Image (cartoon, each protein chain N blue to C red):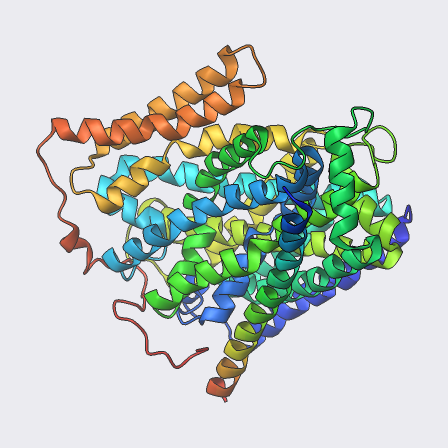
Length: 512
Length: 40
């Protein structure tokens, strides 16, 4: 469909629905305090957090990239995408539980870092935390721009500006609550679309038998445009390497993303926090990339769609299959899904960065005295707008760039601090010096590997592995050289400058 | 991978997708209704 007017109408309808739901929530519950602005009152139930986790972890690349992985790796492509991206969530659950147990009144992970390692490391983690959010947010804007350009023929730059204005407006207005409420709406749309599209496609092409015959041909016929001898191998070496790379790349994107800690802090109690991440991640999220790889990518293989022929590149397989195999209604439904995925992830990252600025930057560096919560809220809203439009400026400059290449490079940048965070949470002997050295070594080693290894098939993998692995080794070895031990008990009574609820598990009356 | 195993994964995955999403939707809806009732 190359109809920009239809694209503008599509955007207008989506914008009214998304902003309308956020505004409705804002009118029902006006934000009165900083704690409410960044944690949503800490009384969210299991279902709301689960749905929000699923909506936030569905990126545009989850739908488009998992289908493409199905084209690349055959039957196992979607599976390798799914397990690679879910492992960091399984690591995140004990990290979030531990953080909440140690500092019940904290609302950001950076507050823990400051108490645990001191101001220098706090600043370092703020840079990384804000950087991760900025990267993820910007990538979603790029995804939305590509969606409008390829589906409707809307100018990429116009689409990026429109999407930015929408996301910034409802996050600046409602803070974390605005992000959560829109997540529910976005979850509902993605869920309805998935529940219809996958069984519909399966029925249309003739079931699993047709997909299997296609895989057999791709594996055995060297003339097939997608020939891959490992297409039927569930544990192919290339697929496993792809999954492993996804683990490394996604680890920093999850463990340094304040948006996920916000959801952990917002849960009523620890039991619901744990189950919300398991249900949202494994029950709701995992089957989506699995099935998009298996069925959508599998349909592309079985029908012999090839890059350079029907498809411009294998990235186009999902929109092409939806529009050309199922028809224009499915094509539009898929576009709605991708737009919801882009905005829900963008608002999670934007709200996460908003809380780091509103709480950590404002209370510790902008206004060190007794803060005025009204001014602090205003600061948070202004920063959200500035940060949001700065992301837009970068997204405008990324037109035509390979998102996959940027994603791989981001793994090197953001994996290095993970070891210092996790060891700091669980080991008394982890020291600030070891934290700084491990981050510098991981980041430096990863970048050196990326730029110095001439073979482009392995430099990204070695770079990512060093960035994540070297800090783990250093965080084990370096603290053994010192005798000091951190006393975790003193964190229990820690309080932020603003008024914060928490400190005891809230009674399970709201939303549960 | 045999055809039977492939078919099992495809259909099991489809059921998982549908049931999983409906389950979370039901949980979320229950939460929203409870919050609305509490606020009243």
